Length: 104
Image 1 (cartoon, rainbow, N blue to C red):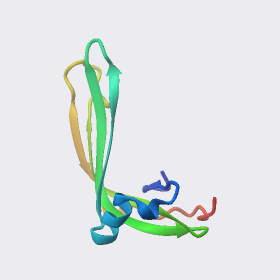
Image 2: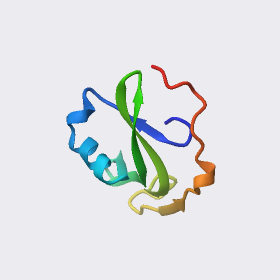
Image 3: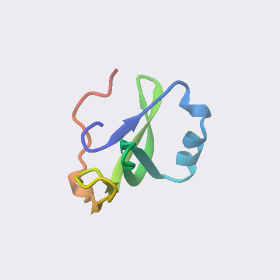
């Protein structure tokens, strides 16, 4: 996370399907989920949808995802087995670029 954006990178991402997809379509979705407990079965997660761009940092490419819609389930919930769904839209005006220098 950098500012309000999610930044990811990896080894030689220029050969990945994700890299090619973002070049053709700047829409991106990131899903993170896990099990809070296995007994009782209690999955939880977050889905972030927004725009993605490829940026260069020290000569290496990385992805920057700017969230537009965030959907979560069972993240802010205390009732096991009954996931609470939450959805919020992220206004563009509240998604500042980080002032942290882009160096690793």
